[in-house]
Image 1 (cartoon, rainbow, N blue to C red):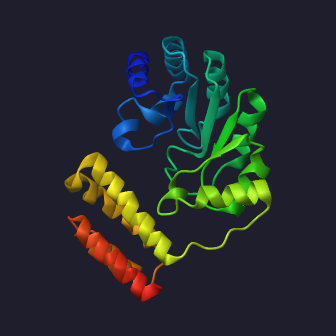
Image 2: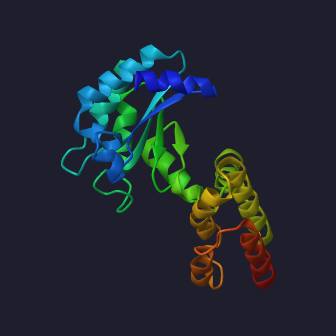
Length: 243
């Protein structure tokens, strides 16, 4: 992990983040991600090694525990701080929960009380109200938004306006949604090529079209797309039918 962190420096990052919260079976069942929730001492050693290997701030992301019977977030957070981590992000669910069930605000609040470094709250922050609730329930220093941004990159602007200026921004129009979707996929194609990007774009396009009239049929159609022109044609059709 220390060697990997040094390798990352080639890309000039602002921080090095160690993800001890990933619940994906291919990661967590092979000693990575959330598996470290079961071995806080190893998590400490890894964090300390990475901190000593780089000059950048090192942060740690975690979950509340492996399951409901082993909530180790407070202990893990204290060890991370001791190892030199500069901030902690905590998803308020166990690994067993994956992305189901309710967010555990109580454990995030306990982590906040236990350490002096910034604590970032994560889990089900999808709009202005859920953002305010996370801050109110946990007293965390910042918010991390994951799935809530899928097909909704405006969520950051909306939350900032609500929390910082007490403003509620208007809804995003369908034309802007489709234009942003196309720009998003264009950037993916620039980075990965059309073959790979278009297959990954099926997932993202599904979120951009969520809630539209006939959305399920649209998502079924998108899953067959292989070329960007097909997505462009769909975007124009969606704007015409829903504008």
